[in-house]
Amino acid sequence: MVLGLGVVAVIPHDPKGVDAARRRRRPIVCQAKATAGGPLLDLATRLHGGGPIVLPPDVEPASGPSWWQRLAPTGVGGALRW
Amino acid sequence: MTTLGNALQVALAIDVPEREGQLLRIVHEPAFTVGGRPCEVTRLCASIRDLEHVISTGSAEVAVVASQLNAIPYRNLVALAHRGMRLVVMAPDPTDRQWDDFPGGLVIGTDPNAEVLAFALAGDRTSITARRQRQAAQSRSSPSRLPLGAVTGASAATSASRRPSAKRGVVIAVAGAYRPSGKSLVAAGLTCALGVPGPAVLVDANMRFGTTPFTLGMSNGQNLCQLADKCLDSEGAWDAALLAELQPMREPTQAMVLAGVPRPSMRGRVTEGFYERLVEALAERFPFVVLDTSGEGWAAADWSIDGVSLRLADRILLVIRPDVQASRSHEKPCASGAAAIVSGWYSTRPASEEWRTGQRLRWSSGSAWSP
Image (cartoon, rainbow over all chains, first blue to last red; front, side):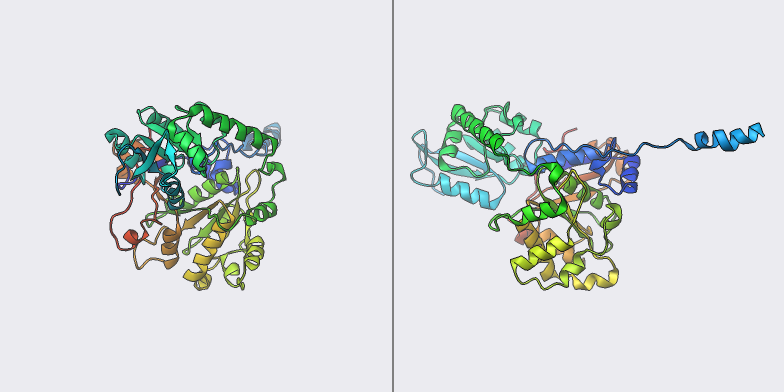
């Protein structure tokens, strides 16, 4: 009970998921691995009253090499070779 | 209410006035009998808490409960069904597989006729199951839902606009408590999820500063103010205007979004009267209308639009962010490191006068929460 009201969902602290969803400009329920999306999907299922709502997370573009991998062959590696 | 001698005592836990009225009409028909006994509705439960009280006191023989009452989780409904009283569940889709194993098997649709209701109240599981199986076979042979891959925003809006105007969708207001608490996050996520099985619409009704166009990557040019400027004197005009101003979320959802006020100077264009007509027009066209409010409307000095949202909503979700002190306390929701707690869930329409006059509210049950 919160403020005398029944709690229908608890959304976990998920700054990473929220930030990633916001960067992609998508709702949190569409974000892969976002823990905050699950309780909302569950709440929507109960609101709708039918079977479970399955929302496949968006396919994210494959991430490129990290900054040190990008630097290694040219920048740092080049400097070392030089 | 007069009590009939051997009447079957029924409790209704529906909390939708129209459906309650429909069931009352059927049950109180003189010709309606269950196993030769007349029926009498002895209790109307507005929440799961009320229903639990009826079950614990045994003040009815049968309870008819809506599967959506207080957004009760399925497992809690199952637990209630195990508590001894005959439970008849009214579900929007009784053919769904989750109901196959429901204790008692008395699951009917939300719009039952007298015959089905009599079977269910009598506990005739065989007839109800046979009927459900027939319905399931029919729905498999003629699927009514649009294939998700083919759904675009325009088609969703068009199909939604063909809904009969007699039926009103559910209006959900996402409110808060005067500070940023994650209302838009909840509203957008909820609408997106509700838009998977059928059309749903999100209205950015945040009169302070709506962020929906930025967070969902939508155009700020199609918005509430553009709609307010149009001459909307007919159903056709509303259809055309909504089609022009609503923007679709991307697949796989059919949800649509109406962006809010783009500039503070344009707030004045959205009047109470227009906003009320807008919500009603959307509720006639969409099964679910989610209003992302400013989080105010609780006091007379707050935005009047928020007050209208709270007044028109069938359900209010109160989003609360626990503060540091609460997070350190031993309360269950906060102990799990919650970022936001979606609370509330009470009907305002039946109790709107009480709400406006500051009297008692009809709270919902706390049983929806489980650790």
